[in-house]
Image (cartoon, rainbow, N blue to C red):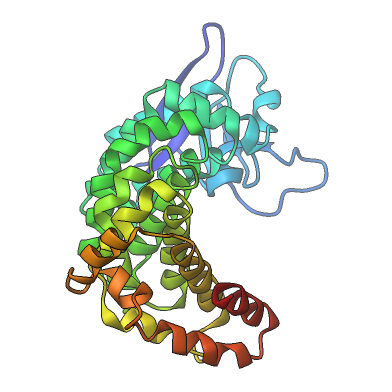
Length: 334
């Protein structure tokens, strides 16, 4: 491991990042701490302190932290939980992320930041330190695993409403990752999770207007995990009446209706029925309906028009062994 994090405490406390050179003086902490030793700190050489696994940043990401012995005891820092990382630690991680030229190290740092971002206080601090833009810069990293960890970190940061104002500018880049990445990849899954959180409220849903066809196309070619995540986004969007015109006009593969089948996994089918229920609740004027019928391959014709196979397939699902699926089908048909 070539990059480790060091904490230098003392008068005027300053924090630095040190690189581990093979054969150098910085060492990983050893296992087997005795009952008489501190669970967080153990001296390995004169002038060194090793933070053991389970303490501070090591507890969050698995990084072992080694530093010169501080002049002032720092046990209060060492024993803090990930939810209480101090601002200087987050600054240190962001600085390390920007300067690292090793993809493995970048992954570990992004994992640490992502885990820290599960807590509101850290979500705010990372935003205040311009960390969102720093992290999002790695959406274009050449290493796929770095892009995955970037999406995961942004996903946690997106749980914070003020953070969404900064994250929303990266929606086109996230959609491009979905389109260009291998089907069923961790990149697609991470990108869809981010879009799910960003689309929970209707404030930023308009940013996904042009992505409906992409989502519908992904729905018919992906595995169960990706189908579930794709449908979470589609359900969010279809819950907003202001988005309905864009949804029903979007080009859709005719095979979407084939998913309304007893052989479809229940978690997928339940969300698919929720999506269909939202669409069925939309009531277009006669003029709008006529215009949509003349639009080749649009979702309206595939799922809502009288010529659609959806109705007959829903009737068949009334005998589905899952009671919840039966109830949802009954609500749609009545």
